[in-house]
Amino acid sequence: MNRFPVFRISGTPRERGRQFGQLASEQIRSNVRAYERAFREGAAIQWKDATAYAAQFIP
Image 1 (cartoon, rainbow, N blue to C red):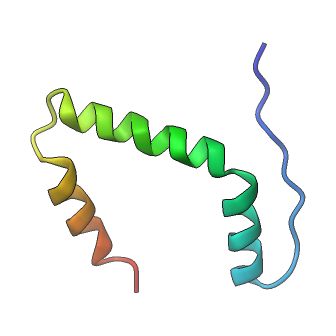
Image 2 (cartoon, one colour):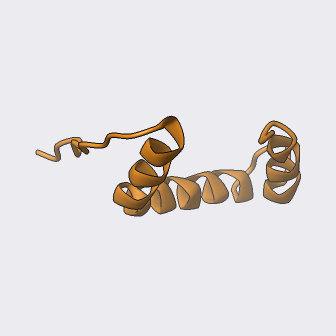
């Protein structure tokens, strides 16, 4: 049985985000690849268009 990873992080919100990003980098990359594949295999919007739209919410 696969278990969900548990990460222990602390610090400011920015520090916690960076720690989590580093610790979960494998899972994050895997998830992005899954989304890319899903968009390539029949989504109504192209991956590059979806990421461009999402980028406006970064600020």
